[in-house]
Length: 349
Image (tube, rainbow, N blue to C red; front, side, top):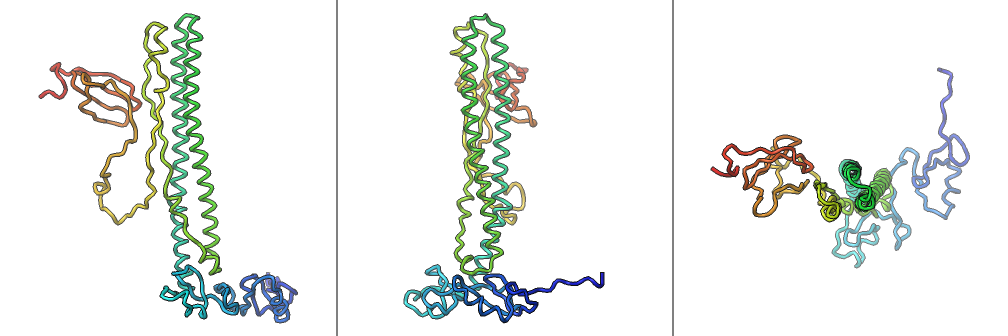
C-alpha cells in the first residue's frame, strides 16, 4: 500500500535514526553521539568507518607497533606485519607481499578446498558408506543361504547329529559376526569422517565469508589428510560344498572359516583432469586392479586354468588342460559344463 511506512535504519545503541558511522568489527551502526562511547569500550578492538564504506577488510593490529595495522604479509615468517616491521632484520631477505593480495590468495585456496570437499571427497566417502552397506547386505544373504543349507543337511541326518550341526552353525555365526563387525566398524569410522568433512566444509564457508584478514590468514589447509581415503574392505564369498559323506568326516570337510575372506584395496581420491586424454583408451589402467575373486575347480597340475572369458554380466566361461569348458556365475558356482567335440583340451590345435 502507498501509505505503508518503511523501516528506517537506526543507531544500534540509542535507536536514533541518524547513523552515519559503522563499526566493521562489532557490526553495529552508530550515530555521532555514540561513536565516542563505543570506542571507549577497551575490552575489544573497534574499526569505525563511514556507513557508506562499511564491509571493508579488517586488518589485524601489529603486536610490536600497536598503532599500526598489518597491511603486509611476510611469507618467510608466515605472519602479518605492518609497514614499520618491514625494515626489521627479522624480515630481511623475506618475501613481503600486500596483505590484501595474500588474503585473496588464501580465499582462493579456501574456495578450492571447499569445492573439492563438496564435489569430490564428501561424495566419495558417502559412496564408501553405501558400498559397505551393500556388502553387509550381500554378507547377510550369503550367510543366510549357508545357514539354510546347513539346516537342510541337518534335517536329513540322525538326531544324534544335532550337537554336531550346532557346532557348525556356531562357527558360521562367529565368522559372520566377525566380518559384520569389521564392516560395521569401517562404516562407523567412515561415517564419522563424513561428519568431520561436513564440519570442515562449514568452517571453510565461515572463513570464505569472513573479512578478517588475521583469521583468514591463519588458515592452513588440511585437505591432504582427507584425500587419503581409507582402504576398501571387500569380502569375497567362495562357494562352500557340503559333501555327502560319513558324518564323522563332515566337520573336517566343511571349513566355514574359508567361506569368508577379507581383502583391502587402495581407493583413489585424485581429481580427474578432463583435459588429459581424449578417448577411453588413454584412460586405461597401466596395472590391473583385483575387484573380485572366485574359487573354481582349476587347481594344481592336472587342472590348470588356461582361458577365461566373460560373455555377459552373469556368466564366466573357463577352460584348462582337460576336455571341458565350464561355465560359472559371478559367485563361483558351477552352472554347467560342456565337452569339446574332439575330446581334447580346448587349447589343442
